[in-house]
Amino acid sequence: TIRGLTEKLDREVDKVVPRHRFRFKARPKDSASAPAEDRRRNVGVLASYPETEGASAAPSKEDEPAANEKDYNRELKAPNGSNIRRPSFSAAKTISLTEHKNLHVVLPKSASRAATYADLTNLENCIVDMSVPASGETTFLGLALKNLRRCIIITGNVDGPVHITGISDSILVVASRQMRIHECRNVDFYLHCSSHPIVEDCAKVRFAPIPDCY
Image (cartoon, rainbow, N blue to C red; front, side):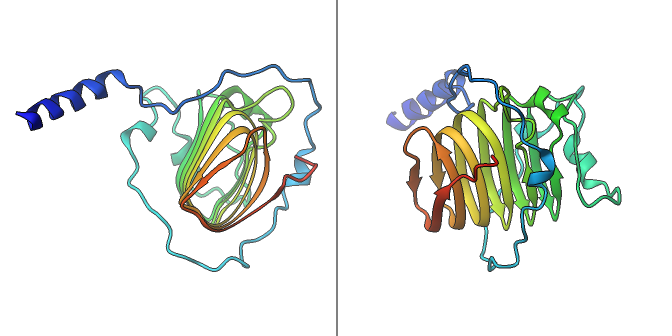
């Protein structure tokens, strides 16, 4: 039957189509001195952003660390008495932050070892500064931001695509080659993008050039 053939085709496509998002190869860049970390710590507060209903999604198994990989998300959930958390990600292949609330995270220079791909998913009332490990010659090859609510995100340099989906009441500082923005509401974007960003199904989003210090 047609239905049976369609289901068989879907199964075969799932076997051969890669799950990862498209990405670009890193291009060489001129060496530049890393900006001072302390200039980016005081990034403001979120009090001026009214709360709106944000998107939510259940964490997928792909987000879970491998058996022999350190679980930095579990480490961040454990209280340690510090207002600013600095996970090294020195034992990780990529940077992934998921399912956090009320955290201020500043990635140190040691995280540059994992600064290949990064994803931030299901964050609320968080400040995340990834600019130090992704500055100068070190850049992210790809970045995904999904389901963030009332957050301030400073991404650093991304030498590939950035996918932004389901962000509300937030501030994003992003420098990249390509950007796709979907289903965002009440978001301020401070951008540097080598191509025209693709913006779809968004409301009350505002754009400005990225500050010189980044």
